[in-house]
Length: 385
Image (cartoon, rainbow, N blue to C red):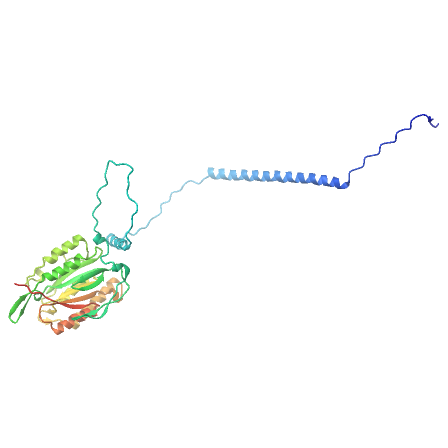
């Protein structure tokens, strides 16, 4: 049966409309942002986790290395050292130090307050021996000169760039440079006296002694020297060339100045610490050269009146120059150097006690010329005796 509806009752309310769903685009955007936040959080957490893991592993490694450090092992290594020859090493170091420029000092020793003690006195240093005698050696190499000598002699020098700490030397006006020098002195009776036209003359042999000591006294402490005398034989001041120290110079002065000037004195009667070589009478320059070359000198200064003989037998120019060639070969072999630089220079001074004989002058000039030296003459001064 149909329901009865009163015409006077209120009408029934209409149903509320259903809400409209959000647009699809807004839903997608919210979901995207949510996923992005999750991704960022995940990455941050993963990074933190990785760093923590790396830190833990690194800490474990460091602690493990510390706890498991290998024990210290001590090893003995063989140290091979070759000791230098003390004297040669000291001389070489002195040469090297002498080439250095002089130091300049700007600071001074100062004290904040007086001290109860004083500094000791400084020792005396022989500065004249510690430095080269000639400053020219520091800035220029050895310069050799060639050609004829001035006036009365022959001159022949070697050029070269080998300075090698050579020192300036001078004997009776002949100057040269070298490291080791030997003075070869004729002490035969004709060097002390001569008979001319029935009259006997005596000569100032002390002039030769003074000139020899002037050369030795002027030498640098790093140079070497020796003195050899000859007549019927030959003998040296020392067994070998000595450094030019004050003590060695003083000993050489005593020996040279006390050489007997008696014309009748022979080598066998003379005293000295050096070697003697007796080879008969006469004026044996050949014997003198044998002893001289045993010292292996760079320079030889020979002073003689010109007589060279074995008593009555005269020694020819060919004999003496041939002997010198062999001695120079032996010297170069001993030095391990086959060049002319390894030879000894021989400078010759002819002591004019009488009128010069032509053959003697030619022989002495040949000795100087063949051995890169110079030749000159000096007049023997007569004494009043």
